[in-house]
Amino acid sequence: VGLGTSSSEMKSAVGTLVIVVALVLVAALHAGLAPHPRLATQIVRSRTALAPQSRVHNPVLRRRCDREPNLLRSLPIRATEGVEAGERLAMEESESKSEESSPKLPISDEWQLDVYNRPVVNGGKKLWELMICDKTGGWRYIETLDQNKINSKEVGRILDKAMEEAPVKPRSVRYFRKQAVSIIRKALEKFEKEDNVRPIKSRATYALFDWLQERYDKVYPMMEGYQPPKKANKDFVFTKKPVNAPSYIDGEDWSFSEVRLSEIITNTQDMTESGRVCPIPSDMSKDTFVPGLVIYSNRAKSLAVALMGSIIDAGDISSVSIDSERAEVVYDMGVEEKWKVGKLDDDRLVREARAFEEKKKQLGGLHFLAIHQLPQYSVMDLLFNRKKELGDEEIEGFWLFRQGNYGWEILGRT
Image (cartoon, rainbow, N blue to C red; front, top):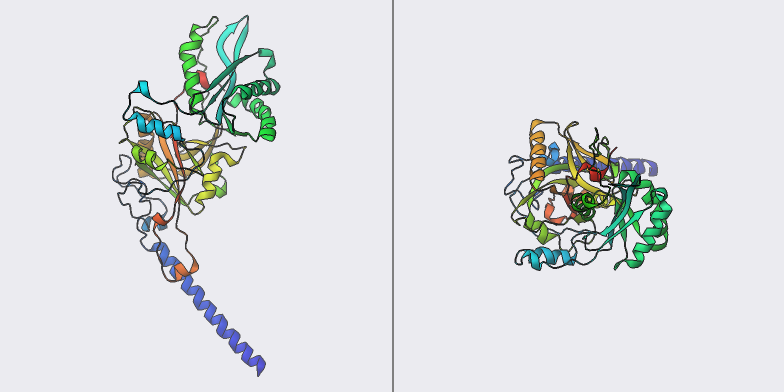
């Protein structure tokens, strides 16, 4: 009798479990197909020259999207190396003060470094320079190197000297030069171990690029032995083929968008965890709409941390680009890496991508990337068809990039 009763109870329990599972599956399907208001309401939709009919691409998410025309209201962006207090002050005061009275930015603990030869030859030897600046460009250090001592030991010696003279010790050092990666990385090992200085391969070295451009335009042509660079058949451009991004930074979907510059300035003042904001031209109207890419992810925080350069071999993200030859959207990572984001697999996406690049070009390379956390649903949420608005979640990463059109002579050659 006991066995019979136990068997009956077991059958009843199994039947109940099957019903519960079925309800969960039905609820999940219903939740996936039900309209989900305000997905991406924190990204500007009131005006877009990019794509008036812009839509996300995942068919399930598409049904859950409502493209309301709201501006980044109460955008809770979090980032580690964003706009510093002095930079915020500079941007705020630039609207009311003349260029002559613009405040000087505080020296940053982020360094940018380059080691390479220059277009000056004396006694049959090329001029080699090691250049260091902080990310504001307010502090600069330069020293020439003996052509016979271009090695990590010599670079390390000069770094030691620079650190003694620097008003602010570095917390990180970014470097972009493909040809000098091994020398720089080796030289930084000591400082990484002893001083916890973080080496980062990165093309987001804006102050350093500007300084190099200044020297190529105004300094080297005035030096004895200057030899105007003869353009090679193949420029040094970042032509490495895009590869699949690591699975842990895949997003569920993505879309092109635009954000008013004033909204970016206002909402990136207290960034604390992941993201970066490049220097903003003081003469650019705050009403300018900046083009960008929005990534929707269930693992937004992990994705944002990875893009910040948490993986030394990969470096950090410096821009978002369109690979027109392969019809792909890509992250520009480290020195020359490219990670695939998605395919431009229909005419509408191709038009949006073309408009994105054109608007970016008009703004001197200025564009953004936002990593948006998708709402998280529990089993009970699915069972009772509870809807969550995206406003309850946060943008876990935000970058404002300036993809420079720097001369091939600055970047070097392949």
